[in-house]
Length: 516
Image (cartoon, rainbow, N blue to C red; front, side, top):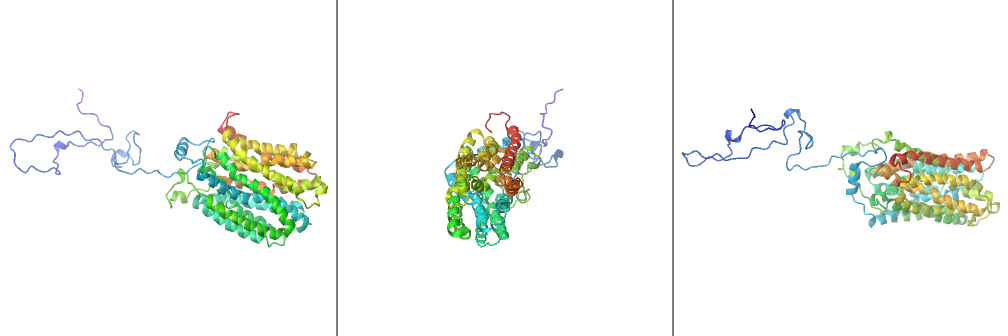
């Protein structure tokens, strides 16, 4: 026999009918009535959507539509639970991350271009210093420390690069936690003091400490922060914006090559450092006011929450992600040959063109000048092309061709014109990868914790920047002063490093000619 009782869900609490209960909340009739009052017809009560936690063994917190779970009571405010962003696997953002990134619109211009200008000035003042070290190295070898091997003097620039890159990871993490602009102004003050101390150094060990370690540390405290800022303002034009920002290093490097060369000849390197220090402080002040930080949606968490305090230094999942190792292995190996031409091109020109060895003209520094200026052009154009062909593609190609140009052109450059041609080509292709580094990180892992991951990527190239050029100089010394073995080592390391990037490239996009 079919039951007339309607079927109720198994987890809905059954209540006795209200008509069979005495409802004390209803007022009693004030006057007696002998005829029975009609019973009002009421709709059956709806099952409760928020039963107690003990009901049928259910636990609170389950979502609607999961087969008998619970949801929030009416009027309850829904809040998003803070989650930690982890390195994604497979080289692409998850659907949830992509949806949030789309919802968080990028200005693609406006105030963002002023931010790019500020980053351009910072890159020129800070990163440009590493590209003009060859001017100081040549002066130290000729006048200040003539009895010191040039491979030893190269260690000063290598120590500055190592301190800068090794500090960047810590600075990027602190910037993500305490604010970009706070860390940048701390870096400015620290670097200003370090440059002032460098101008009073008279002994080689003092130069190592001040001009090498302290200056490099100060420059590294801000590097990942201004490199990451354009990615917060641009998505479709991210490569172009980042390329323009980081091109300041090559642009200022070219100008500084001329200015520092003239100042050293006229007033000496100590007064040159004093003048240069106050020029930098002026640039830093102007650039700092142009910067503005935008916080990605996944990082807008309440201040003081345990999730933010206890989060690891690297996003979860990085150490088990093969794409992470592919990128870091590429950077680690390739940078052993990256800076060698910048450090040795002036000395190479003097060896190949003997009449320039004792010349005080700017002709001997022209190769380094054009190498830096062509790098500025390359970084801007590469950023524009990367938006069309993909940052990972351009990043990998730049490292491969940077090594190839050394192998097939530098060791055969025996005339001044060929040296200039090599400087133009190498500067153009070799400077691209560093400008695209934050763009590649954003492409592979997203913009969350971008400064932290960019800082770690910069940290990975610190061993190569520290001892890469020194190893190259030692190879040349062991070869009796011949340049060819050193060039083969430098170009070979850069080419081999580019091969490590192929896994990340084809893991994220298997089609050869696809933009990625």
